[in-house]
Image 1 (cartoon, rainbow, N blue to C red):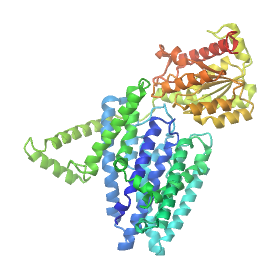
Image 2: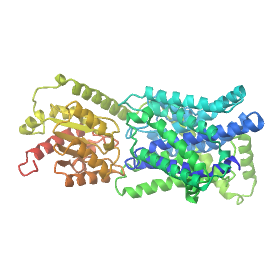
Image 3: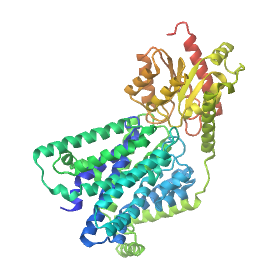
Length: 619
């Protein structure tokens, strides 16, 4: 049985992985650990590359390295190149603000060093609202490409020196441990984890786990029949491995220390176990993964990966407010992702259209194909001719955009980032040292005197995301004793450790105000867990979100549900209050500008005072 035939059920694993990745970006509250799905691709890449090198070395005593690289990069490079051209054409025509810094994004992606470039400029995988390039996801292809180039040479060297493939097992285990240790040591709790998430050195362990498996359990062993009772046990183990992976996808957050200090390594090991049990033909899992719709997705997984992030980022940037009828927006984005992926699959994988630079990267062959099409009668190969003309026009527009692109920083975004970073540092210092707080009770324009006096002495804890940090200065001016704990891109389900830490420091006061929901919605269970951890004896205020994203209505509905179920939960309806005041918001329509920040702080003060001092209220 050939390597390709033995790997058919593993195509199904790639289908599971790509769906998890897409839904992690579309609906992160549903699958908060969906980012882990890239480990499927890393483990499978290590497994297949090592298997193919060992197999060819065993047969020929060498590896045709040039042919090997040509085959791998042909499958990667041409679809990538055309995706970059199409997206750059779109940006040049319709979203010219994204031309800023376009050149390094394109060059680092084509040079397969995008992950290291993003690390060098401080790029973040986890920030939601700062301007993001539609090429941010290409860090993944860079890591894979670097593995393609370097690892086969190491395998060949080890085989030549030791004449025993078990040396690869020992090397892979050693390198995996080194990589996992590097991730654990370089990760700084509480800080953005993008350095360890993007690094080839800190993600190598997934590839090495796959490489080790290719030695311990080579695919040719799967041709050997096993007794039925062994097959049932393997099936049970396979189902259990997928259940554990599913639990990790549901609960392993990208903000947890455990994730980077052993969690991802454990996840990759379990994925490795699932790979073996899925590949074994005696298991039910293997048969399930051969199901035609799963296979259809699996065979297109690379193209789906190429297109999912550009579609999501460009669509949401263009539409802006996807909060109205969110299901429709999700379906539109999915339709675009699958349509573009299918077109790419038919062109690059199936060769349905013999177009220049689609079946070969060699210029001579492309020019020859253009001459052939040009020599035919006008009506012959008309579809191919139209596509070639569109392709040439797209290339010219993309080159124009490339030439016009300028380096630099988006002034508004940079100002917001600096403001939020400074605010976070200031709030942390204030929480540590109470003596730096202002003790004066000043009149606040827009607030009555009794509200000012109440707010100044109120013991209140604010928990939130970047929206909270953007108004923190105005809040502590009004609420003189307030504790403010904010973090960029924080979500409700990421707050358990925050609440525990605040309570341990004695800073979880009797009134808690929550600014969360801008980065994603949450489930009823997640809300109930949050309310229970804060405690029903505390007054709990939630700010409704005005975020123009598909999860806006879901967030606000969950807040209203919590208010109806818990007497200590109250709603601060900022969404309704600010709905007619776009002039209060920055370009992203989420973060308030200075005027909006002042209005938000006044609104919070007035509403909390009214609620806690209303004789007809619950308090």
